[in-house]
Length: 457
Image (cartoon, rainbow, N blue to C red; front, side):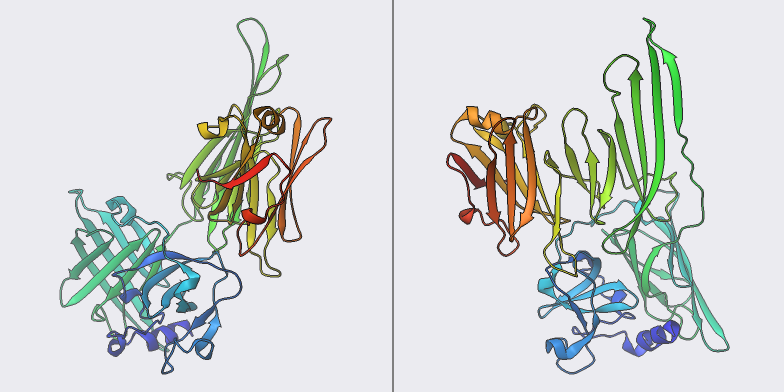
């Protein structure tokens, strides 16, 4: 059925599309401003069709299907009259109101030649791309197929070309076959002029890397030895693998390596945790998407969005990273607060408290009177940071003491509650309402002598 659907949408007569057309068989034709994007906002979003006159501007009357949930990463080929043409998969293509799409996601508009190289697939179609021996051009080959009820037609292409930014064009001899490609992160959009093979054959589509089967092994090791002065030592390295699904249905393979060096009789084992990530299907012999190494006990993915490192040794401490990029998000010395703004559809929100201490990198947080920073975030961005300060430096030192104060965060009554409890003293409680998915600092309930102000790193 998919083959027949694609045929109906990519016949030669349909290639000259209008600005209001957004269809799976034609999506790859619009490469001039193709970019990654993310569905934002709260609540369900719909995919709107373009076949009814006045659509998609008629809104609900144009609904074709339920759209991707908030947080899903998609491709956008164009924006027209307040709507974005979105591709999530071959079965999920259509217009979405542009206000529900974050078009600011970064991507490499001038990728290196090596980023193009590989075997790319779209159903039975394959494109093979390699860097030419001169190191300046790309060598492209490929095969495409159309499967009828009792017959199969095919086509092939080959050529060399130099990309211009993240786009590439070439003509495949013999004949008049012309092909255009656009590389957007790990996705390759291809389109042709529909004369690159037998009847109904086209290379047009959204291609993904084709991965062959492989096996990966990582050894766990224990080494026993002695120091020069005769103390026993034990070095332990344990490796585990974990498959995680992102909010946009992509999957990552994580390799976690926990290592520690123990000197018998000494305190602590100098534990370290390393997390490396690969897209599912990529051989783990290849360079990972990222690798993060921190002193700590463990690391775990949270809600398909975050990677949280447990840094706890003498004091509770967590470092929060983006799961998809491995970039540092924020630190917290209170257990990470997680909740959803809506139910049953989950809109994850996260709150942390970084307190002033010797590990603090930002010198502003070491100023007299500073307690720390309250961070309110979604899975992909910091929404608001608030600086907590005291009238006196002595009170601030008591409230941010890692040795003597307990930090706690809670969500109740549509408000964030921060509780700081010094040993042997009464608690200091700060309550900040949530309004329009933001911290309402102006209406926060704060004890006398405590201040709360918007702040940016």
